[in-house]
Amino acid sequence: MRGALDLALPPHGLDGQASPHGIGLSSEAWNRIVFLEEPVCDGCGAPFEHGLGAGALCAACEARPRRFARARAACLYDEGSRDLILQLKHADRLDLAPLFARWLNRAARTLLAEADAIAPVPMHPWRLLSRRYNQAAEIARPLSRLSGVDYWPDVVRRVRRTESQGGKSGSGRRRNVAGAFAVPPRLVPKVADKRVLLVDDVLTTGATAEGCARALLKAGASAVDLAVVARVKEASHLTI
Image 1 (cartoon, one colour):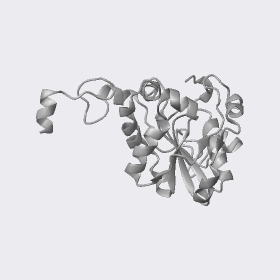
Image 2 (tube, rainbow, N blue to C red):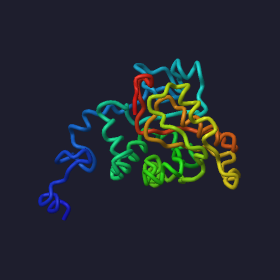
Image 3 (cartoon, rainbow, N blue to C red):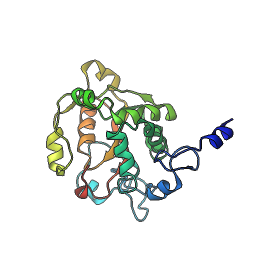
Image 4 (spheres, rainbow, N blue to C red):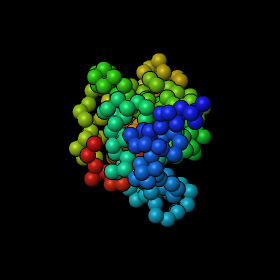
C-alpha cells in the first residue's frame, strides 16, 4: 500500500526536495550537512582532527570547565543545517523535530545510556505564549520515546525573562542569563542525585546550558550533560 501511495503521491523530503532516500531529507540536503562523529571534545562536543583518547578536552574546556559535564552535537551549525534548524525555531516546522530527535539518539547515545532523565532548555512563559511552542521540548519529547529515558519537561524553569542571546559576546550571554533559571522547590527531591541530559537546538557559547546546569546542580543533581542538534565551530563568528 505504501508503494502504491508513493507512486500516486511521490514523497518529498523535509527540506522540500523530491524523492528522499527514505523518510527525512533529500540526498542533496544530506550531503550538505556536516554530521559530527568521534573523536570530539568530551566537554563541549567540538570535533577533533585526531583522536586524543577517552575523555579528552579541547583547550577551551581545559582553560574554563563548563557547568555541564559533557556535550554532544549531531552536526555543525553552518550553511547546510542552519535553514532546517531555523525553520523549526521560527517557522512552525514541527515536523522536523522527530528527525532531529533521531539524530540526537545516535549522536548522544553515550550520554543517554547514563542519563536518568531528559529535560529541554526552557523558554520564558511570555516568549512561549508568543511563539506557541518550545523547539527544545519538541525535540526532547520524541528523543525520550526513542531512548526510553524519562522526560521531565518542567524540571527547569526560566524564572526571569531575558533578551535574545543573538549578537552578544560570550560574557554578555552569561550576564544575560545569570539567575534566569531555577528548579521548582517541589521538584528538588526528584532531581537529587540524578544525572540529567539537557536538550537544545544549537550550542554557541554554552551560556544558556550552563545557566540551566547551575540550577540543576544547585537542586542536587549528580551531573548535567548536554545534547544539541548543532554546534558552531567558532562561537565568535555566529549570529542566530
